[in-house]
Length: 303
Ligand SMILES: C[S@@+](CC[C@H](N)C(=O)[O-])C[C@H]1O[C@@H](n2cnc3c(N)ncnc32)[C@H](O)[C@@H]1O
Image (cartoon, rainbow, N blue to C red; front, top):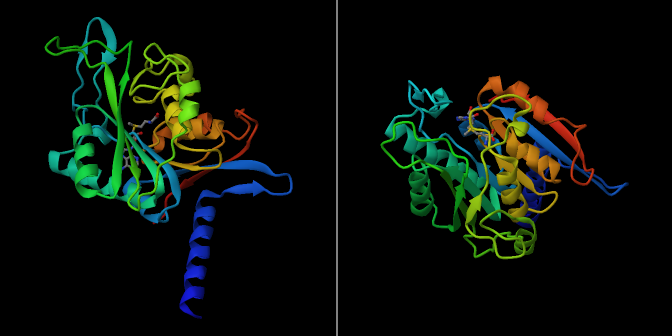
């Protein structure tokens, strides 16, 4: 086999790998798109390593923020208690190492021109920004978005200002000068809130209330993101049939939004107790925006 044939064979098998993993399925006879949604139960650091290079169009990561306390704070006036999740507690060094590792894997699996979105608070977002800028010179930060929460929880200690926003970084992989996907016209016509009038350029400050009760119909996850937040991200940076990956999928918001809008998805989640919630939120028979058929796969990661 000459060099050219070998490269061709390699390329063909890596495309097959991706399709196998994601299970992309297009019914060519009926020319009908079917999207696939795979939930992999396992540690993101291990699972990511099995995802082929340059196979993903968009990564949305809502990682641990390292903001939990071993003993949460509560107060008499509200049911709210500060976060005390075990998965959200790291030492300073471990936290840096962990972030460095998953970010490296996410950029590896992204296609050129693909996007990485990461959500955070002041606890983690500066570290994330530092890691992207310091260790990934072939990427570009396009925006940092402030997600303003008009109904944020009160400050329990009364010794600080009330935290009423989260921060999101949008970075793209453009080492070879490749431009990223941004559905500019869609954003103008489809993003609207008190800060962003319809028809105008969308600002980098988004006004989105906390996840409403009606979106928590399937059960409780302490950090379930609003559908609207993911709708904005996924629809501005992908097209139908693209592949979205969430390495910390939690209750499955990213997969649910990708599924509804005709994108394929892979979600990774370490904690098995989220499985019932994920199973309820992701069902083949649920309605999608334009009746795209869906296939849902749940599997446990085996090394
Ligand atoms: C901030 S939550 C994500 C919430 C999600 N965006 C949603 O809307 O439901 C982070 C999730 O990552 C999971 N997690 C933490 N460390 C992980 C790891 N190393 N690999 C996979 N999942 C992990 C946690 O169990 C938790 O469910």
